[in-house]
Image 1: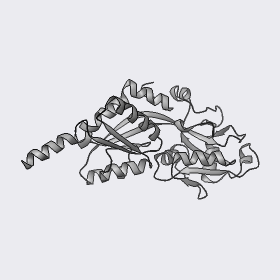
Image 2: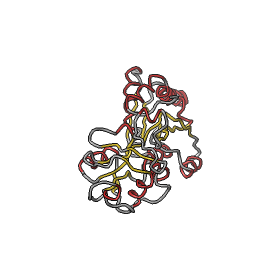
Image 3: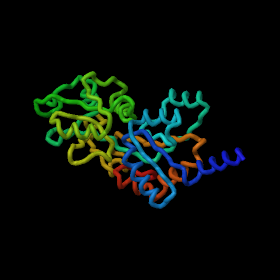
Image 4: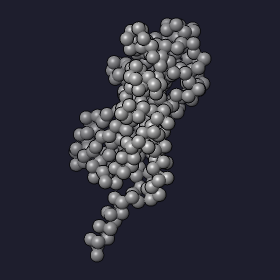
Amino acid sequence: MKTKIILFALSLYTSAYFAQKLKGSDTVLPLAQKEAESYMKSNKNAKVTVTGGGSGVGLAALVDGTTEIGMSSRKMKMTEKIKLSDAGKACKETIIAYDALAVVVNPSNKVAQLTKDQIEGIFTGKLKNWKDVGGDDLQIVVYSRESSSGTYEFFKEHVMNNKNYASSVLSMPATGSIIQSISQTKGAIGYVGLAYVEKDVKAIKVSFDKGKTFVGPSLATALDKTYPIIRPLYYYYLTTFEKAVKPFVDYCLSAEGQKIVEQVGYVPLGK
């Protein structure tokens, strides 16, 4: 009798009634929320909850078993893979969309474009005043995500050539906090996922060819690959949960799910 009860409980656990939790990347958060809402409308028995906190937080939750899907804006680190292996767990990686990472400033800032070297100089603390890059005589106030953020790590690796952020950089717990701070601070600069770009901040054009061409972030420039700061967005899930989470993951990869990617402001797969 006890065995039958356990088997029945396991069947419920892996059925459509399984309450799935997604946790991690703030960049992925708005996309996952919209996809979860849409998925639950057409799958009445499903319950999908989504919370942010950063890629590192989501992947740590995957390791300790407190989430079914870890959302990430970076690839899983070797140290995280080792922790999974040590725990006797295996996971799968799925790219669910692409993002154009935008460098944003206060709308009142007259600077409209920056080279990669200038951006690096600002975030490493070498450039401290907007007049150094053609702007007003105004102190540069730099905002960044916390070190647990995948966006923080991606920006450091791909834009700053793995150089350290300046000690004066203000770390923010969420992307929304960066948007709010930059909208209220004239000399501010930061970086956010494309879906977060709104009228309260101004996305600037960037050049990765030493000032020959400057391109702004948009769906169009991401699709034609002229914008230089593009990255994949990931779902990670344990193979032991695959049967339970795959219907939702497959929905996110479907034509309907990829339409939501574009609606939210990210770049669909296969375009």
